[in-house]
Amino acid sequence: MTLKLPSFFRPKLLDIFTGKEPYNRQTFTSDLVAGVIVGIVALPLAIAFGIASGVSPQQGIITAIVAGFIISFLGGSHFLIGGPTGAFIVIVYGIVQQYGMNGLMIATVLAGIMLVCMGVLKLGTIIKYIPYPIIVGFTGGIAVVIFSTQINDFFGLGITHQPADFIPKWSAIFSRIDHIDVWTTLLSLTTVVIIFIWPKYNKKLPGSLIALIVVTLISLLLAHFTDIHIDTIGTKFPALAGGIPLPKAEAPHIDMEAIRRLFQPAFTIALLCAIESLLAAMVADGVTGKRHDSNTELIGQGIANLIPPLFGGIPATGAIARTMTNINNGGKTPVAGLIHAAVLLLVLLFLMPYAVYIPLSCLAGILVVVAYNMSEWRAFRYLLKGDKTDVAVLLVTFGLTVVIDLTIAIELGLVLAVVSFIKRVSETSGIKEIQHHLFMRENEEAIDPEVLQIPSGVEVYEINGPFFFGLANKFDDVAHDVPHKKVKIRIIRMRKVPFIDSTGLNNLKNLWKRSKANRIQIILSGVNEEVRATLERSGFADQIGREYICPHISIAMDKAQRLSALP
Image (tube, rainbow, N blue to C red; front, side, top):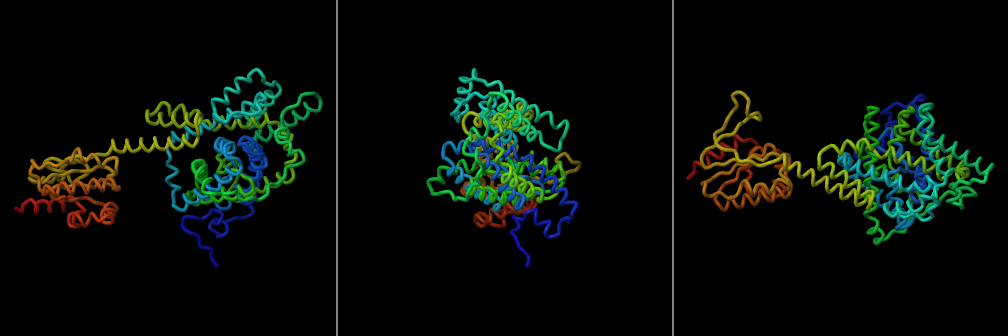
């Protein structure tokens, strides 16, 4: 019995079981080593992302286990490693503060449904073309927000109720600037220094894990031999002192009012997940030469966000840093991602009781480094030197992400990018009237080009570019009623029109009606198959007459000459 899957959904793991890609002991060994290392790398990040998102550390690890397993099992990439990422900290923290854990569960489930729908509708390729200034703008903004949220724990300021909004948060920080704790700050700085220096000595073990172990030991020694006590995970989550309980499966309470309120945040989660996972998959393809399946990846990401909320998990996506760690340590197939999830599960079951001793300052140091790596300040600086429209999109997206809200930033950034795209296409497209004669060849400067003379009573217009709403209204300026010219035939040359939308079609109909009222016959030439199909579906082909839709200008000119000769 052969398992048949739809064409838009084929997980890469199937290539192993179907024999499309041979899998042997050597490949498994490579996957095993990479999976163990990636699992170790993911551990401190999952804990830090969980706490920074306003949930508990075990919720971050549960997300890395469940979502990481599903993303590797059902995803469309050979190498992608999934789990909670820094990009979600801002949106998740905001949802938890405003709507609580039930709201976060509903938003994550809705986002999962949206992602599955994106994959089924084959939108994977389109999402990859979201403008670069938007991506740099909101990732840079997220980095600034993450950095801001860690200042309190980094310097030990002792702010018990930190405001969620950016400006009030910094007001609270400056009001406590004289309460900096020296030992907390030293441990935070030690964490940052270890993370940056460690790769010079060993690239296999992650610097964040080494920093976690070293700084936790320093904190324990300080508490044992002195009166210095550093805030730890156990301080923030005292209920975990007796061990970290596993969350129980629980379905969120969903109603239409909750869906209405959480639709926007859910859309932001889905879009962030789609962008980050597909970017990570493209980076992996560029390094390895493999090819991922965008639509399968979106469906896998969607399912990976449907299941974790039932266990208290948070949104997850593909992570570029962990994916590159997987590749650099020899990962060959999605099996490495499955092993990474298994390693985290073992850690959760047997080692997590010791997590209560981890200093919050250490996690703050890890997240400060994450924020720095996310900031893409070099790309930001480069884009500021570019086109003014790109600069505007970049700054608006960045500013709104930091000061207002990530959801609004992405939505307005996309609107600005679309408007910019339409403006540029409209500027490079156009409609012109051809006078006296026209060239049959693309290159009018060619030696001995074939030329057609335009007979009396015939006017020819050429459309250059897609005939969509950004261009359609130009016809009113160029091809207005001109009865004084005694025009009998109006040829519209459409050889450079790849498609026509409803607005363009409506303007074409209006032109035909005005021309008909003035006893001018419209002839379309150079109409490609896609445009012709649109004309036929709309019924306009029958209105104008199918004989007046010509595949080539020479046929249109012959027809025009015969019609113009009639009395």
